[in-house]
Length: 99
Image (cartoon, rainbow, N blue to C red; front, side, top):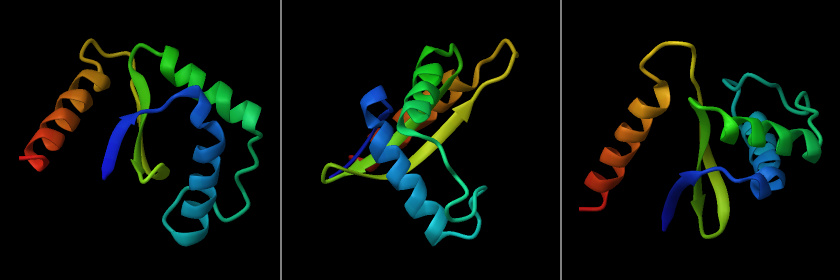
């Protein structure tokens, strides 16, 4: 079963592994294979900063206990925050898909 949830700090290692797989398997990613050189501590700090942000986050897709996808949302300084719109959209998509 596919589960979509907000990232947690303890996802850092698995998120790093997912990014390595994505960088190697897809030429459309920002980073080339082995170009992403974050440590687990740096990845944890990035996740923590996203969690503590008022209008940014990372949603991850998990299947059978393994991370299989991600959606990074970075908000700006506008009055209407991206998170409010994305959260609403994600909820709508999930509830429709489960019908």
